[in-house]
Length: 80
Image (cartoon, rainbow, N blue to C red; front, side, top):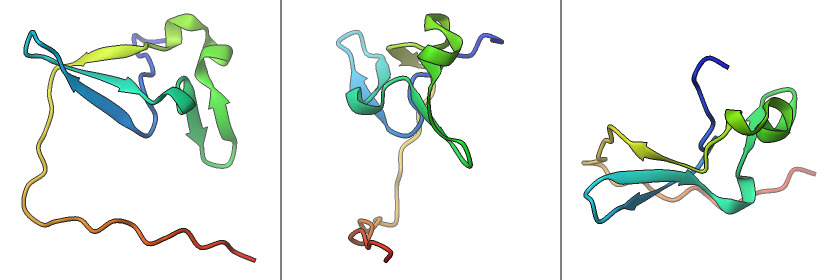
C-alpha cells in the first residue's frame, strides 16, 4: 500500500459533525468491497488486510451541485 485506504467504492454517506467538519463512510451492505470491471466484486479487507480499509474519513474538501436538476434513472430493465 502507498498510504491509500478504501472508504467507499460507489456510494459515500456524508455526515456533518457538531465540530463543523464532514465525515464520509461507506454503506453497510457494500462496506470493504470494490467492483473491478472484468473481475467482479472483491473484498479489499480480505485481500489486502485491515490496514487497507477505513470505516470513516474526515472530508477535507467537498463540492456542491448547483444548476440543472438531475432526473432519477429509469426503472431497471432486465435483459432476456
